[in-house]
Length: 554
Ligand SMILES: Nc1nc2c(ncn2[C@@H]2O[C@H](COP(=O)(O)OP(=O)(O)OP(=O)(O)O)[C@@H](O)[C@H]2O)c(=O)[nH]1
Ligand SMILES: [Mg+2]
Image 1 (cartoon, rainbow, N blue to C red):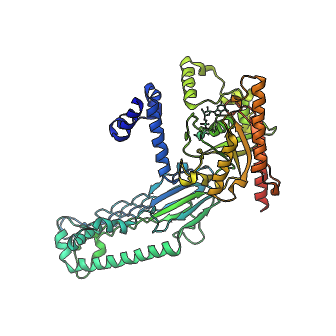
Image 2 (image 1 turned 60 degrees about the vertical axis):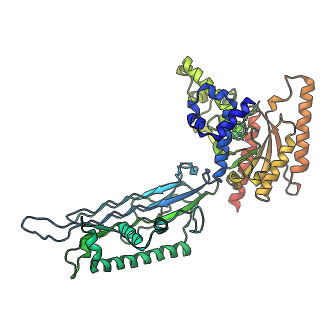
Image 3 (image 1 turned 90 degrees about the vertical axis):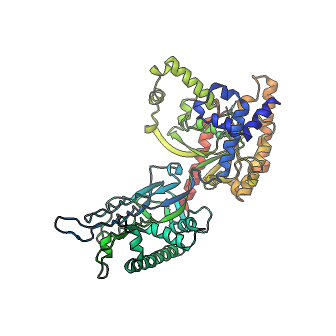
């Protein structure tokens, strides 16, 4: 009763939450023991992730780009001894920086791309005809294979452009207030001449011309958005546009990629408004806002193999085990530990050994246990004489950098549960990453009461997400085999064998696709204790090889 009461007060009153807002590493020891608090924070984190609707996953991102704002023009007059009325001398503002997008082989996911990007602003013009400096270009680096699409303006996720933002800020004002606010956004006045300026006909003419120009710009921008929305398939590293300002046939010296948003033009200095009727213009214009564009970035292929399984089946443990601990997937004994798909690279040598196999003695325990062990080792000073990863590898005759013959990527996913299609758990969003995987692998907990039921749910959920998707599944990994069979008691071993056989029978009758001659392999393993992994890796390697050769043939 007491436990429930504490949980409820946390939910309604913000104060205790505020006091326990620290990083997991900085949590006091007592925090980990307060199971209610841990449970509450975990649920809140899962809920938060779900609300994002998958917009920040590694393979998909909604990105708002605003190119740089142009610098303001300057209203100034030349001052010189014996020349009381010098000519207007305000410089123009610098152009705002453009934003480009470029594919690079150095990245493998969209994780490093921020979801808001602002181009560099141009600087303001100054007196004595000094123009402002142009903003430099901003380049967004994305992995090769990224498809970039512009979201239409009607899409609720797309960011408002400068005119929509202005409209919003002016709502509720009367005509004169609006007029004043709009002038404020567009004009720079010579000190103390603001009120006098706006009365003059020359200013009114200039203002009419400015609005006309703005309407044209706005029309052109909207027309472009409708007729030619940005859609780029960045499948090569050297894609770049010719620089329209460079002499014919000459390429831009720097590889900037493809232009996606142009910077705003700089404001005009007051000399621009010099005319027969106005010999002393005391106003200049402000710089234009840069182009705003909302893009959806999608990575075509994220990983070769996708792991699909219930929460806690041991997917993250498996990924760590087959990558030799390089993939930093978090492992814990509660559901939805993994909130984002993460990708690991499996490296296989010529003789079929893989990196994780070299450290087959390693136990991949829960992250919190591993961290505590590491800290203890560190405290004892054990690391001072420990072999480095390369030394350890060379003692077994393997330098992976030298003998690596094949590599493929495996994605660890958040857990999938029954009803994911109704947005229970993390929903389906992360399965998008798996849509284009070359092969899928089911991971089930063999120690559970009915692993075959899990398989059925997984298959149904895949099919609900995308009909035909479950055909990509090639293997069933029966994890946690160490937990069944007891301590070698013949009766327990027999029961364990029986269970495995039942699972195999289920897979053969229910999951196979005999028309295509496809039967799924069932492989019992223990990811935690790295048992029976070589066979898993060699089968995965075969699937990837087959799928790749089929892709080449197409
Ligand atoms: N005994 C035993 N325990 C295992 C094995 N594999 C994983 N576990 C344990 O099972 C629990 C869950 O493991 P995770 O790897 O976090 O499971 P997951 O499928 O990634 O779970 P989610 O991220 O929540 O979907 C942890 O407590 C692991 O230590 C295994 O082979 N044997
Ligand atoms: Mg996990």
